Amino acid sequence: MLVGIDVGGTNLKAGLVSKDGQMLAVEKWPVTPFEKSEDFVAQLVDLCRIVCAKQGVDPATLDYVGMGIPGAVKAGEITYTCNLPLQGVAVEALFRKEIDVPVLLENDANCAAVGEYLLGAGRGTTDFTIITLGTGVGGGFIVGGKLYSGGGMVGEVGHMVIEKDGAPCGCGRHGCWETYSSATGLIRLTKEAMAAHPDSALHTVAQEQGGVSGRTAFDTALTGDAVAVALCNTYVEYLACGAANLCSILQPEVLAVGGGVADAPAHLLMEPLAKMVESSCYAANVGTPTRVVKAQLGNDAGILGAALLKQVL
Image (cartoon, rainbow, N blue to C red):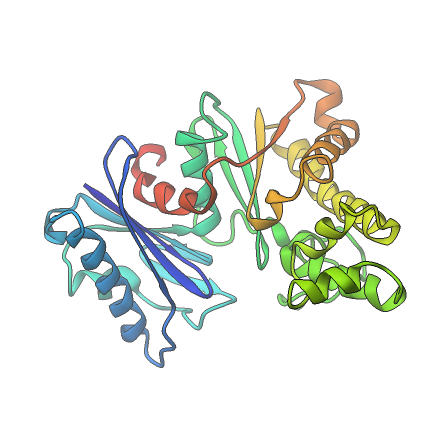
């Protein structure tokens, strides 16, 4: 038995997983505010115990616990993260004081890449890339059937600059891909469009939704509103810019797009994205074009990938 834990900025999710990738039990909690790193790791321990208890499994008998962290990790320690105050936290050592089983830490997008590669959109490939569109933009790479990680900041694709002197990013730079292509970036672009076009149906849809979200632009575009349609086109162009860069460097067989934004209507997002990437990607003109597809596992990708990490290390 294995346990995969997906650590998010607002929620913690854990799954009890069999070695062949079957999800046997799931538990989800909001992150409880904490002052000490020990208190945070205690939440992970409790989550692991509860998800095991659902199937009567003793946590001490687990092969290992895999964890996806939103940031950089190395040798069982979190070295950097933007959304939680966890820099320098020795997660593995603290966890093993309570449940003495091996702990594998990895970046959360890398875990999503592993899950999709083994069980989802990447099945049957050797070279696979995923991008995740959430609060930021994450990336994960399978190269030659193995996770390309290296520790540190490998996979932080959201921080490649696609717009010189562009919008400020939380990392301190300007024009990073995630300032335009994350759900957060899409919300910013939507608010800017609303400010510039007070008569757009964006205002009505946002009010109906209780505020601007990552869905607002695409839901409004479905009504035929010209401002929303143009906004969605601009968003896809930004997304395609970064995606084509990745394909030109890595030339994966498949590039999957995950995260909440990927649920937008296919004719407004995935279909034009695939066409833009293929037409603008250098690698597609000299080799085999990358297939651009929607990720398949949804919120389970990170849990499953964390649990099955050893298969691709």
